[in-house]
Image 1 (cartoon, protein in one colour):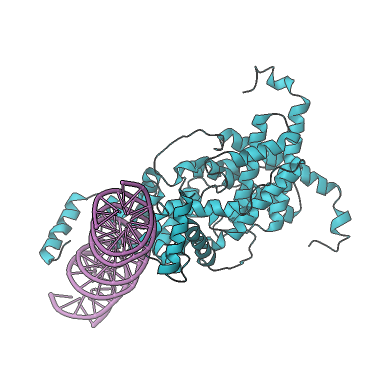
Image 2 (image 1 turned 90 degrees about the vertical axis):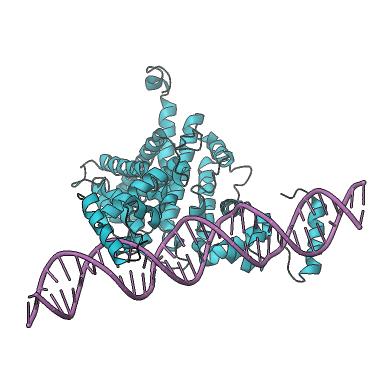
Length: 223
Length: 223
DNA sequence: GCGGCCTGCGTACGACGTACGCACCGTCTG
DNA sequence: CAGACGGTGCGTACGTCGTACGCAGGCCGC
């Protein structure tokens, strides 16, 4: 994160002297401020100027620590996910592991609804570590890596979809309107649907495992 | 642009002559132009000024037919969905009906990726007609209306999630980069996951149907 | 001291959504 | 035929946005 330790330290000293109580600008402070604003006022209210006033610094000072607003959005999204990382090692029971992953994501999105918007798939940026976690956790269900990948994507997609359905209302407006309607997915809906999907996975995995040859081999290997 | 009367007059003539067949500004034309731009250049490139130049009209003229940009985004999203409406009546087979709904949504989002962004849940704006369609189509699976609602939301959420996963890349950038990665949901993933979910629904519905009383009634009616 | 850094930030630019108000046109009324 | 009126087009202007650029001032090794 920091190229040099001592330089950062020097900056801290400088800050203490020059701007008295100000904690000094840093990437971490900027990201934290941005998250605070987005949480409190909605992502639409998150502007570079707003962040600058929050930290009472100049607007352009932010750009010394953040390439541009897009990078900042990526950073806060990643930070939101990092608040609730998938634990290592994953639970041995595949079902429990899927429930855990789903719940962690659910919590991230409930705590920071803007994460659904700032990144189209917050947890799965461009690296596959989360997917790998899920695929690994499914080892107890199936040995077919391709099937495990497909299942993982299904679970992940489902979770993301329900979360959108759940927090859709207050995404743009910063206000909180619980707004009960049959369209709004509840936590019960979330869990019921997840169990349904897991049931389907179990059934499907055992089915392909019980008769792997008939179709697959006769048709000349997997598609 | 034009400050004087005669110049305006000249323009009017020009309009009549040059644009002869043009039906003049209309809400439909504006919506269509907006969709064309969003399809071709991405939703980020969609501005009121851009639409105005597309229709070569003044920017503020648009506001005679559209309340504001938000309303326009809502309108194009609804228009995108209306291109592929759920057919009436729904297929008798509940499984086929779910597949159909899922496929129609998938096609909408593939054709117009921005629809995933312009409305957090494009098809389910604020009315329940699509939900009702799904619930009705599930009559063959379960008689429990609450369960049918829950299933509908699960299917809908899943579809939305996979679509995001599928088109996430070209959402913001207007460019098309197929970009194959294990994270990107394919059409095969989409269908496999859907079937898995449907399997789970079938199993779960038959399970609750076989022993409906024990819990529900003993606990004093539905929650 | 002095020339290179790194950091903070004031200014400025272009793009955005849109409030406001004027000019025009067709129609309706007297 | 005149004059009023509602609907439409749109030029101007304002406030906000992201951010390019460049300057000022403190630190470093020489």
